[in-house]
Length: 78
Image 1 (cartoon, rainbow, N blue to C red):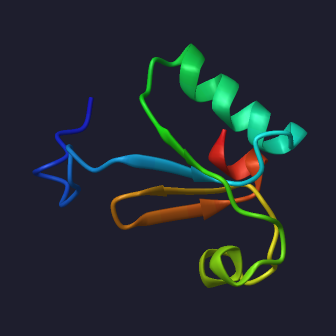
Image 2: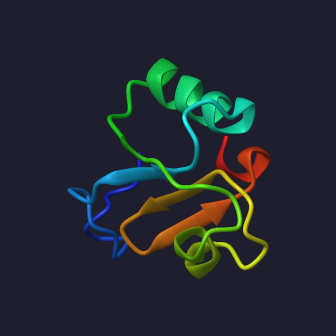
């Protein structure tokens, strides 16, 4: 197990998933987080919106943020 504080991460940082709750790809990410017991907050955003483009230049959902770590594409997140 990696010590988040020693690795420069914020162990208390909130996990946020950005995307539409009805998206199959967002649902996949949410199921993995639930199975791993990782608490998260779903931030509903539409694909191609200005908010999602600020995170993912391709405008696709889902996007994932944990502190300074930002990922997009469900295969990369899971």
